Length: 474
Image (tube, rainbow, N blue to C red; front, side, top):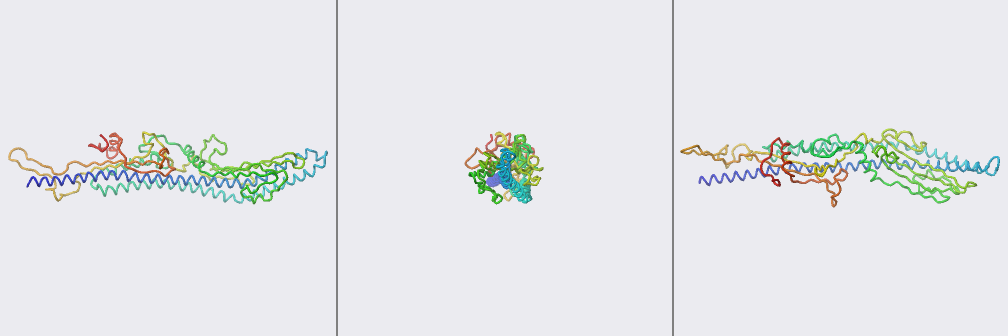
């Protein structure tokens, strides 16, 4: 009966130890996976907000494109005035005075047409100027929106770090209230989370990632490429017919309704483009940094064929509107006030969060998350119902020799380690590299590479080396 009683108590203790060991391991896995889920959600939120920032830049380009089109209305009249000024000069050279007075009416008529269009260009320019404040307010409002979204990105990162602490605390209280090392990995996980992030106050340091951090100027080129790659095409495509101006092809054509159908006048080309970055104004020395939003029109080319005695005359005038952090630029000046300084300067001040792509050895900087805990397998204080006493030992007195002691409870701590992975996968396409513009970040449990990695995590979890077998590692 004594042997049966001892075997029963031993079985109960072994069962309890196994249960506690499973619970500690489940805690480590839950910790690693829960942190990975938090980080994946944060990365996806940043990806959506980066898209919103890119959309705001595209909207700024759209505003500039519409303003450039409106400005082109004034430039159209200037081009007509230029062409008929050439006609008047040519008719004068043909001999209005003193050679052939028959050309003088042509000089006078061409001059009147030129003056009329020149006067109209100022009228139209004033109407465009009337919208200047609204234009600058729109650009500034979108800039404020970009700053606000970027501020929210920093808030997301900070809130995620706070949630890591809360989750780890709750898991520890629920799963291993008598254990330790559960919270020691917080700084290590936080570092892995923020290390690949560029353009945020809490990113780019600590953790276990590779690759050099890009400076603000280099990061601004990334957003410039995304914005330029997603913007609309602002080409109006108007091709006038001989003797007809074709105002239906022009936006805001009410400014152009009284353009005359002069015989022999042909608008050959009119186009509008919208762009962002220094590339749009030919300044490649700046490396196409994101520091200017602009739009411009090319044309119109007004060609006068066979008007009176003039075989050919032409006039051309383009418009251009740009904003930056200083003063911007515009042409022609009659349709604009001088300042367009409402654009954020992303080459000097961060305006979005970028993902620093690392090497293959570091899983391209896709973060790893870790969980670890150690706990006495008999952590609950006091005697279990099936135990003989508080010590869990039974000592038998022998007639000869030393007493014999039998321990019926576990004497070692349970150790649990877990690893998770925050990984990027665009469904159906593994070739897309990890980035913070596509919201395809996911979380999973992941295996340890080798014992070197395990020992490194052990050091971060309290300076102790984990001993014993670990699943998947020899």
